[in-house]
Image (cartoon, rainbow, N blue to C red; front, side, top):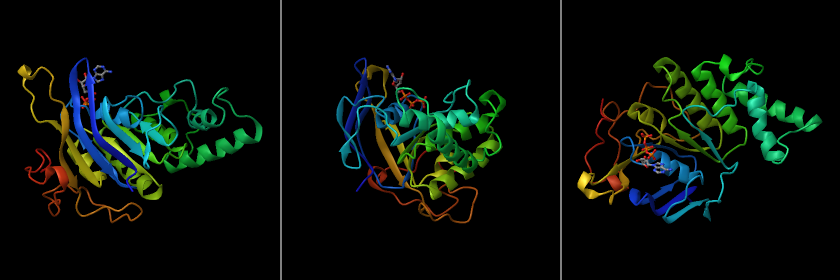
Length: 278
Ligand SMILES: Nc1ncnc2c1ncn2[C@@H]1O[C@H](COP(=O)(O)OP(=O)(O)OP(=O)(O)O)[C@@H](O)[C@H]1O
């Protein structure tokens, strides 16, 4: 059964169709990259998966059940910036996630429960490469370290689905490559299904099992916002990546460098994704 099942979803803002007829099944442990031109509705789609927005039409289900009305711990999220709390230490930022889950009203844990939360938080911080930085404040961290902290914040709640909105978009290329390796490891080691929005085709094909392109089929000023973006390509990355089975690292799996990606579903009749071939 799909973890995420999207059926004929439409979204409008101010009588302008942003997304139309989006249907998508995401299998357990997939790593899906969403790509497409700026403003085509990728973040809006991700926010619907998070329950921060609702579709105007259509349905979204998680594990066969309708999406909860509010964001919950089953779905973690990392944005490009500003998701960490500047007044809390690194450890405090991660423990807070457990505190809010266990004590939503007070947002505080005490005694043994607090110590257990700190132990768990230290483990997650070590897993994202922030062991030793627990007492620092976010302003003392580099951009890459802040995004590692944002990942730790999301992972501490043990989400089944991890939603990433351009999480590495603001990082320098070297730091980005390092965090890509971390992201691959986290995906292999933890029971995560990942949906990541990115502008970067190379990032999409480096990390994902499947690359999905959103695009408006028509985009004329005279259309008056009657046409939204929809899924125009759905590419299974080849050679296939399987969660839990890392293969020897390679620099990239861009089509053209490896065997061509087999076409599936929506893209069967479409030409290859523009810009995907180096
Ligand atoms: N809350 C909102 N109210 C009104 N319009 C919105 C709202 N959120 C998004 N939009 C509009 O919906 C369209 C899609 O925005 P969205 O941020 O989802 O696109 P995107 O593909 O993620 O863009 P980018 O790649 O530039 O981040 C844009 O025209 C945006 O202005």
